[in-house]
Image (cartoon, rainbow, N blue to C red):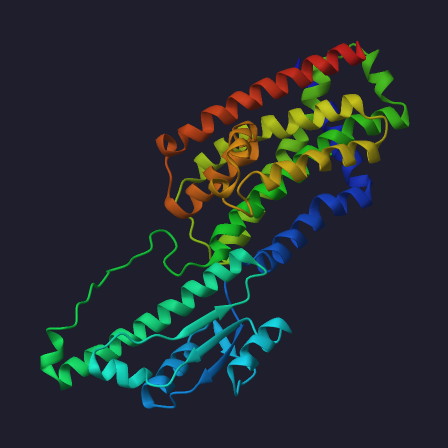
Length: 376
């Protein structure tokens, strides 16, 4: 029973290594994707241009401006000589944020009175603008509190009129808030998805195009043996890609890996049931390899966009959030990120693993039945 599967699997590997173009897609392209996406898919705020109009021209205002430029987020933008210059710089796209410090800023702080500054941000990209505003106002608040502490020390009588609330803030799992720690595990999922789904979709169609599929179907081999012989090599390649991507993520991108390798492999196996099933289904309805690739890519785009890879699922419309429960990408993204960053255990990922395994069993079973009906 297993001997024919071994020979079919061996044939598949030989065909793969003889096809240099496909071999480059399988081995080289994922490496390029990992390194390019690992650096390109970065949502950290850096080099945000901020233009300053300092009408107070005091020690306190200079300290506030220096605090902006001392951070790794903001860089100097065009200098403004009047309020209209700030509006013009934002309108013309010459700056990303504007800081206006009015006259009397330091005097208000010295008296213990409320002091205000104007912060304006280019809101074309709403997501980025909100984060820039958060950073900008946090710097203002921090410098104002530091100034009030000095004033209170110099004038103890003001301390009674100064009310403060201090927050002790900590970030778990990603203390430095590096977006790469969030994005790279998602890229790992993306790589094994593309490799497993597309290779499965192409494998059967390629047999039909070269005329060898009919020979396999009239042979003593069963449909199950043919499917196993074609999918097992792809499973092996997918795990090799997973091992490579995980190694690069840990050693090159310095991602923490807090969880279990065996748990990651088990989750990947449940996920491969889905990708192999989808690829097999597409192969039964496609006439050419190009048609199979376009069909797969059509579904992959929607799956990736609705997985939480780029945008939090909580930010999506409620109707779309319900649809994401049918998306296997969602569950795999959550599990891989949890295993990498949080050290998630089996009970922690069970809420994602169970529905993913159910989707995988249904998808792969449907693909096998469709294959048998199509070619028997």
